Length: 283
Image (cartoon, rainbow, N blue to C red; front, top):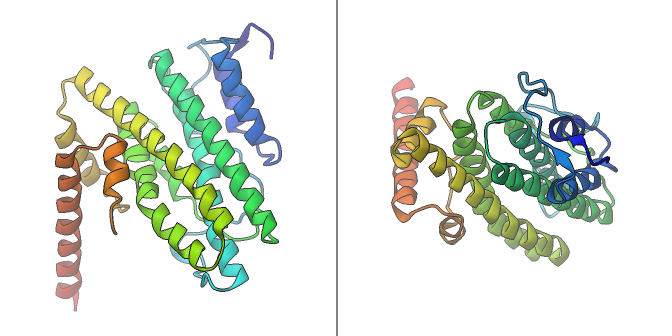
């Protein structure tokens, strides 16, 4: 990459890249170039609605409800679980790249965060793909859904909304889910993938922390109260990713306050009660 290369076309090239053998290492190289100040920020580069991100022809994308459920005890079920996590990490590469590419008014430290996160997500994908291959499968062998990228499309108009609903909701649910997945993997003897998820969990705490930092920073700049703003956004966007147990320690480490975690728990209980009441009234 030449010394006068422009940042935004370089990010866009990787955002649209489809070759899973090359894309992760190219994203890591992109971050290294940014760290070395070899990329020039040029805010006049074209900006348009979220493009369809680069992905291979497989996996086939289906609705979340149509992703087959398999038991972890079978080889296919075991691999499908690892594949589902690898798919999340592949999508997370594109989400981080888009966050750096799209919001041009943010400072260099914001670009630092999201290009670093993209590089870390690329490493996670490489590690999980290697585990899939060790199990006799590869990325693309199972169907997957696209809900993570769909949230990028819903939040492409405002960096505050993106920070609220992608790292602080979608990625934060990963903090909650990983320990349970690790327990299942250990029970079937897959200590290697459980160890990979230790790396994923460690890094994801940092990703959510970055989202928390930028969300609260943006709220302060706009004169908004973060807790009330977050709750309003959860309602406005009808967020459906809050069911199940919370990983309290990881969330606190990632910058959630005890008050906010209480609010999230209350929000979840209230919504689930309302849904039960709606279902009962329909009978």
